[in-house]
Image 1 (tube, rainbow, N blue to C red):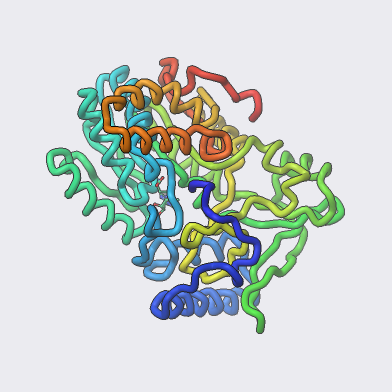
Image 2: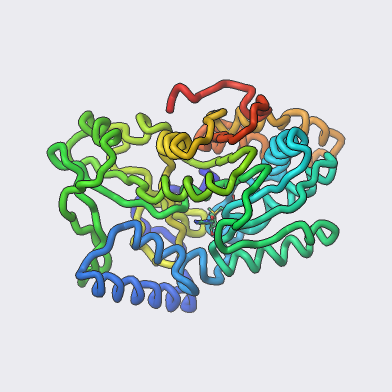
Length: 397
Ligand SMILES: C[S@@+](CC[C@H](N)C(=O)[O-])C[C@H]1O[C@@H](n2cnc3c(N)ncnc32)[C@H](O)[C@@H]1O
């Protein structure tokens, strides 16, 4: 999500008011969550809260019909900022597909479908089209939007695009890509008390949703616990117990090729830093960012930063190789961003100014350039990857 959205501390005071239809929808989501909390004995894990608030069929933020991505929605991602992002991803895909003599692309969580269209257009230009472009999307609403966009924008290529609701049954030879999907996976929340992590669960009372401090966590990751010893009492953060199984499911379908994740996040030592004392939760509503996940459930996005050390560990466990970890800026530059932007120099002045602004948003450290990282995981692929030919940050993991 682009960071030049307004960050507000007290969402109740400053968020634009939803209309009556949206508020009625949020009430239904609140009621479903309230009933679930009651059925589970008075509190649920935050991962379950996030799962329902984002993905409950017909109710959750991603599963119901509201406009989410782009200027008219709640947030903007890199593929929505500029097609240059997706053209760079395509350059990386082309290198792998040409080396393998063909293959498929699997995109996980395709949002509005913008990246799929721009990647396919660029690959067509490069004469490196995949045999098929698969999209695994958990939201039926987004699947329908993606299908409409692909049919409208790529009438000649649409027959190569296929949608899945679960991981493909057949192994993939080619590239698996996911932009800002890991940060949308449900996370658990905890508070560090006297050297022990206690789970922060979600309850519902007269004041609405609130945190309920649960029992000390017995299944907590010891590597995270070791870092938390340096953090103050009361330190609150998130960890993603679902990440490793999810990576294992993705890794299981990659027979040969590259798995490329781009997302917000940090190496573990920076994620669990003493200064990040309230964790990394971020909610987005109408281009405002704040940290209260209980606000208007169903109407706002909820995300948490990615622990990229956990991503690398999970991938290595599945026999993948960690072939690169770098910032989005360096990834895009390695893929030829500067040359692509220069080729557009004959555009008119207004267009050139637009492109220059887009390049800034994608690459400047204070925008998306450093907050978003790219990680490359491969199986049976020895090729030096163009997107990871610049500064190598793997030692930070
Ligand atoms: C923040 S949006 C990013 C969309 C798009 N990749 C982009 O960059 O604009 C998160 C996307 O991940 C999808 N998603 C969430 N959990 C998923 C999962 N377990 N498998 C596949 N897609 C998932 C959401 O439905 C949504 O399309």
